[in-house]
Image (cartoon, rainbow, N blue to C red; front, side):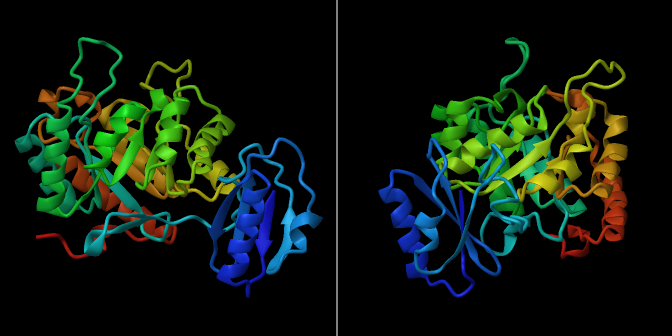
Length: 349
């Protein structure tokens, strides 16, 4: 159920409704909007009586939510959620008018490699830096990441270049360490239905970037996000990164139709990862252009100073010059669909 407060409802009114919900043994999820606050209710096993809440001070109405995903639904919050990442002058808002670009190597291999990538992507207009310190791989013999040493390099990147950091956490125990270094916790495709990890991320104070599972339906994707919100963390960014199909001309099939579908059903921002979505360098830029055209809130692009020497996913990583060209092209398309990019902002120096 969703409790919609009156525009003039006071903080005391909102607190009173939350206390009523919690006294009944349920969980209250206040979600402030531009005009009024809505309060979602979770934890109830059956239907609730609307009259029990509509008599409370400041309440406009109580509405039954029909979707199985409650808190991520537009039934609960019709306005787009804006996710603020980082602090100070380098803070970034994902989901607003600016198209947010996250870029960097698949894995952190060395300080020199990370710094070389960060310098180029920042100058091209990226606002966040991506790089894996922990790398869950298909083969146990593949490079698994530098671990804590990789996180320390990412922290240096943030200090030196003013880029917020996005990096993957792989299990609930790993979250404690990653939280000390990352601005955004990434949950990878293989972990989209790792419910213990989702619940742990839901108790984090950091925003979460949730990647769609390799065979996940849209409802399964949104239900995974619901796990995070149900624990109290409402700062979730969805990421389409391709699904597995019969196609053999590309690593995955990038499902760009999910962008408008998510926009219709959910208030959460959604970005696109055409690097994993295609697995092939020559397809990344065309699919990035298409993602912006269909309304994605941002892009996640793999960029490596020397992709031919990369320890992970070199074949889908762009050279820095290619990333600069990509930024020029998506900036032009962003303008057509009413968005801006960091290309128009002062270059960090």
